Image 1 (cartoon, protein in one colour):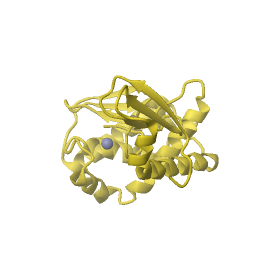
Image 2: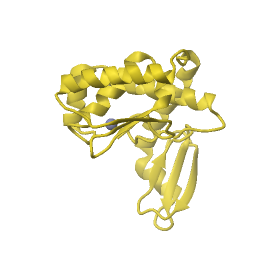
Image 3: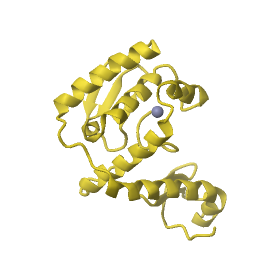
Image 4: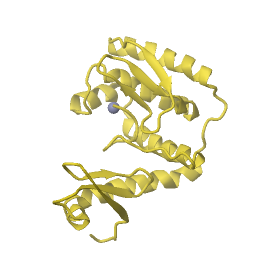
Length: 196
Ligand SMILES: [Zn+2]
């Protein structure tokens, strides 16, 4: 690799290597046998470099970004309900229930029985990103996986979804910075920390 990649390696009872960027630098979770960190870098180096660049850019952007601090949780609920209604109509699908809770690993999630869980930290986001997250989750009611069908669906309403995903990553790290004692962990493997 051209540049030395900073990383931490830990060994756990996992079958395959897992790569995470929880705090902004690479954490390798390796099976107890079969893989050395060097082998992982050799095999996944390109992906790791690309991912690390995306993360670094997002972290740099945090200095030019600010959280919305005037929205209460009650205001968030009202806003979310409104966007859920709209997205359900647009996508012609219905979810079951909406739950709100503070989560450390994602912006929102969609369950098999069509329930949505919304991270209350969404109250810090600008409205266009809230709208995007809700639409994204409701679209999971139609397609659970992040496959081509899914992104085509997203593209109809949010053609700039890639930019929005990057912005979400920036906000994620910004919130993490402001809650330094209680670090958040981005979770959504290839896209941004968000949801299922
Ligand atoms: Zn998703």
